[in-house]
Amino acid sequence: AQTEPEIRKGLVGVVADATAISKVNPESNSLLYRGYPVQELAARCSFEEVAYLLWHGELPTPEQLSSLEAAGRGQRALADNVRAAVDLVPTTAHPMDVLRTAVSVIGAADPAAEDSSPQANLDKSVRLLSQIPAVVAYDQRRRRGQELVPPREDLGYVENFLHMTFGEVPDAVVVDAFRVSLILYAEHSFNASTFTARVITSTLADLYSAVVGAIGALKGPLHGGANEAVMHVFEEIGDAEKAEAWLEQALADKRKIMGFGHRVYKHGDSRVPTMKAALDTLVEHYDRPDLAALYDNLEAAMTSRKSILPNLDYPSGPAYHLMGFDTATFTPLFVAARVTGWTAHIMEQLADNALIRPLSAYDGPPERHL
Ligand code: SDX
Image (cartoon, rainbow, N blue to C red; front, top):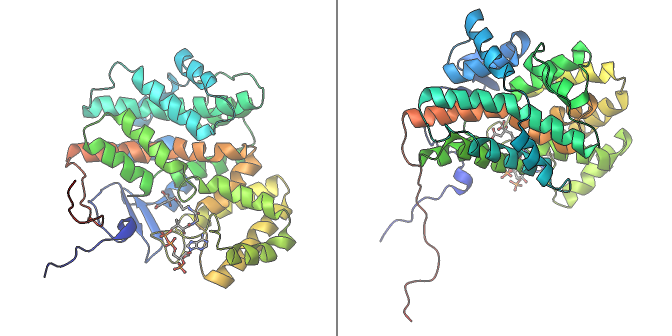
């Protein structure tokens, strides 16, 4: 008798390829970017340095960093055609749909879009890194009825992103929490959106097509959409005292609790302590002990009932809320960070490509005839 093929639903436990970009170790709750613990990078590096590390495999020298920064600074403005494309999308659409459309237009307008040489793909990665903040900032502003804020070349990436969004550079504590969140979100091995980017790249489609597909994969609430969903949960609960009863009911209704659980980490997400510390600084800065109490009560209720621990989206959601971002903008912020990891994986996939094409087992009707 023929043996049935083994099906790993959701590819659980399947090792699909090797990568030199990051190592997620669920046993030790650790995450390394190119060998460096992410906590050390978050403590010591700028976001641009981490982007360089992910792309090139080594941290930049001061000269290499200045040249990356100079290349990025010149491309921060929202191009007219991209602005026109954003304006065509109704504000009833989700900001992830706007960003997906904008990246598609950025790609379609790039005369070098089909050039997949390493240098051309690096140039495209820097372009996306610089232009995504312009799209995200402008989209939030137009939804609020505010005017576009042009970029400032004298600012670093993180400060400029906040300046273009809010029209001012906030206090250092806010800038720093935002920088930390972007570094923590930058890369995480073969998550669903990165794998999507690698699948698209494996057909030899261009880098922009792979990033557009990755944005689509990140949108869902089981993946990047969870940071937004966490804030909706907080709003639904409303008050720290109600967290336990709310959770009881949500679990009875078989709801998935957003911001908890992870496919790979079963003893906790390596990034949570660093992001929680950043959230704590914001709670103090904005004097919001009520938000911290809700956070703590929901986590305590969840871990005592289910032993399911928070993932990075749990502290990131309320942190972005305190910084002043609209809830629907949270997942686009994840894109702004993760585009570094996606593009690193796209370049790695291309360097040693094999078409990604798994098999399926057939369970439809047996052969039949008309
Ligand atoms: C990200 O992969 C990455 O690296 C992703 C990411 C990255 O940086 O790229 O880390 C970013 O996507 C974080 C995850 C964000 N998603 C959420 O916060 C949504 C809520 N979480 C889940 O739905 C869930 O935990 C997943 C989707 C994250 C993981 O799901 P799995 O691995 O498919 O596990 P599962 O759904 O099969 O859960 C196993 C059990 C089930 O119970 P039983 O059926 O065995 O009784 O745990 C339960 C689940 O019901 N469970 C939850 C739960 N998470 C798991 N129950 C309630 N609430 C939850 N959040």
